[in-house]
Length: 277
Length: 258
Image (cartoon, rainbow over all chains, first blue to last red):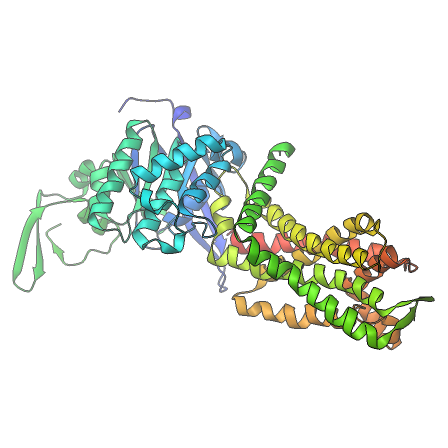
C-alpha cells in the first residue's frame, strides 16, 4: 500500500474512548478504551471481536450518533462530532439492527434516503434503480419492507448505505444470517466499492469473511485493540506453526492450516479445544 | 451550527412524515378528522339541543358554540398527544427511524424537531378543520380561522411534546397508558372542554388551571366566542410549551444516546 500522510486517510479513529453509565446501576462502563486505527482509500479494514467487545459502540461513535468520551473520529478530515453534517455527507452506515423505513416501499425508501444527502430526486431514483439491480432486488422494488425475507432486508440496508456513493462505508455485521450465495454477492459488491476507492470498515464475527476481504484487521477485546495487521501477518506472528491439529469429534483429528480464527481465539482468550497453538 | 442547513434538515424530516401521511391518506383522514367530527355531532348537536344556552364569564351563548370551541381544544390535545406518544414510540422503538436518519447529514436534534413539528402540524390542521365546521354552522366568525391558528399550533406543539416526552420515558408501548389515563383524560374531562370551569368548586378550579388545557380552552374561547381572556392563560400556555418541548427533547436524547 502506498504510504500516505495521516490527513489524507478517509477514516481516522484517534484514541477513541467511550464510557457510559450502566442503565442498571453499578457506575460507568468502559465500552471502548483508547482505540486508534485508520482506513485508507480502497482499503477494507476489519474490526473483529466477540459480542460485547465494543464493536457496535465504536460504530455508533464513528457515525457520530454517540458522542465520544475522549479522542476523535475524522471522516475525510472532518471531526464527526464537531462537523457531523460535513463528515456524514461522505459516510455510509449499515447498522447491525434493522433500521429500514417500513412506511415506504423498497424503491421509495432508497430515494427517500438519498434526499437526506441532498441528492436531487432524479439522481436518487437513478441510483436506487441501479442498486436494486445490483443487489438482485429489482422485482421487489414496489413491495413494502414487511414482504422481504431477512436476507433481502439485509441486502436492502447495505444498498441504502451505498445510495450516497460514500467515501467511507461502515458495515456492522452485514452478512449475519445470509445464505452463502447472497453472502458472496455482497462480497463482490464490496470488492467493486473498493475498486472505486471507497474505504470500508467491516465489523464481523465471521473469521473466514475477514480473512478473505480485509487487507488489515484489528482484534478488539474488552474495548481495547489487541493487535492490528494483515490476516497473514497476524497468523505468522501469533501462531507459531503452519498447521494446527483440532479434535473435531471424539477421535477425529483434523490437520489444517493455521488461520485468523486461531489468532482471534488465542488473543481473546476464548480458545476452545484447539491444540498446539 | 449553520442555521439554514439545520432548517433544511428539519424540513427533510417533516417531508418524510408528510410523504408517509400521503401514502396512507384515507387511513389518516379517517383517524385524524372523524373523531373530532363525532364529538362535534354528539355533544354539539345532541347535548347542545338538551342544554340550550349557558352563561359563562358574563356572556350568554349557546351550548353548541361553547362545546364547538372545546372540541377544537380537545382535538389538539388528543391528536398532538397520540401522534407524539404512540406514533413517535413506534418510529423510535420499532421502526428505528430516528436512528437511521441520524447517521446521515441530518442530526438527531433535527430529527426530533421534525418529529415535533410534523405531529403539531397534523394536530393543528385537524383543529382548524373543526374550527372550519364551526364557521360553516355559524358558530364562529370566519376570521377565527386565522386568529386561532397561532394558538392551535402552539398548543399542538405543547401536547405533541408531552407525547414525545411520554414516549421517551416509556419502557414499553403499554406504559404510554399511564400519561394517557392520568394526565390526558383528566385534562379532557376537567379543563373546561364540556363545561365552564366556574362550575367546579374553587379548589378544583385552581387545580384545573395548573393543567395547560384550561389555558388553551380560555384562549380559544376568547378568540372564537369573544369571552374575556383571563390574564394568566397566555403566560401559562407559553410556560408549559417551553417546558414540555425542553423535557421531550432531553428525554429522547437521554434515551437514544449513550
